[in-house]
Image (cartoon, rainbow, N blue to C red; front, side, top):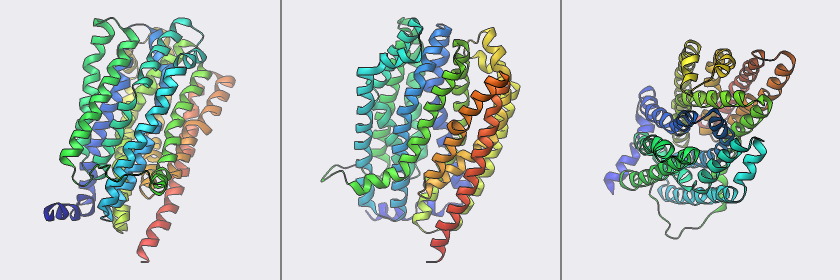
Amino acid sequence: MQNEQRNVNQNKMGVMPVPQLLLTMAIPLMLSLLVQSLYNIVDSIYVSRISEKALTATSLAYPVQILMIALGVGTAVGINALLSRLLGQKKHEEVSKGAATGLVLAALSSLLFILVGLFFSRAIAGVMTKDAETAAMCGDYLFIVTLLCTGSFLETMIQRFLQASGKTGLSMVSLIVGAGTNIILDPIFIFTLGMGVRGAAIATVIGQWLGAGTALFLNLTHNPEVRITFRGFCLEKKMVMAIYKVGFPTIIMQAMGSVMNFGMNAILGAGTAIAFFGAYFRLQSFLFMPMNGLGQACLPIIGYNFGAKNPERIRETVKTALKWGISLGLLFTGLFMILPGPLLGLFNASEDMLILGIPAIRIICVTFALTAVTMILGLCASGLGNGMINMIGTGIRQVVLLLPCFFALKQLFGFPWAWLAFWISEACAMAYVITGLKKELNKKLLSIEEK
């Protein structure tokens, strides 16, 4: 017991040099999120070998998947911030209650999508496309990934237990198990067994359930700081409110990706354009994962040091992450600028898709460094307990400005000018988040320093 307490008192988030800490936290998270994004990337690459309609079907299903991710990740982010602060304050009984609460909330969240999938999956597919073949494939895919979605919610939640105590490497292991399973099973179910789009969905949910089981095993055996127990458990309103104070804005923020996808699909209209944007969005998401991982690494570090009343480590974390994030954004811009054709070729792009997609990618990728600033600083604000800055910044860049600007530019000038809407929305979002975080840092850190 004394050894365990000594380990808790010397938690690396409070003592390790910030650049080294951020690197050790961020690299496993970056790799974890890259591996996690392989679920949709691999599904889409294999599905595109069936037909362009099959790729369009999974692209149309993606907004619903984003909503599942939004609820799961948002709740888990709230848990991450809560547990990090409680660990910093050495409130270990409260940490256990928080972990149990997180699991209950994950199960309840999955139930909502199970009901949606059971009763409405094919109706949703019919609303999104009038092509009967595409709608049938979309409905089949949605039915499977929603009906069996509990594994995804549990996997996301339990990984945050590991991240909250700084064990991001173990979190990565569970994701590698899940995504690796999906990669192996995809061609078997899709082609060998001849199940097509349904096979891609089955491979995905099997991977998610195995990832959840691995995360649970690692937490029970290697994470003594976050003990899961339901002894005397009851769902406390105060704790749920604390979780969703940070988590709810993140849910809204993540859900905006679904709104953006649905809106873009409606504006684009044609099947080839929708297939292109679905392919591009997956590529973008894959490369944005390192930026997101860097920002998520900041969240427990800032939360812990806020709870431990250490403002200098908070400031250094923000500065270091921002510098590294901008460098990543510039690197990704160069990659997309040089290789748009080969990147789209991963999705078996037709000549029409290449004609539309190559100039679009080169225009959009100019904004990647701006996106890095918005994402990282927004998550830093969440670490201080203010998720609204992150939510509003994401709303500006994905919905509030992007969709109307894209629609207006497409109507007035057509392609490729419409893609300039990304420049407008990303620049405005970055300006808002920078201003918001400065105010939050001044308010929160001043309150610590005065005590």
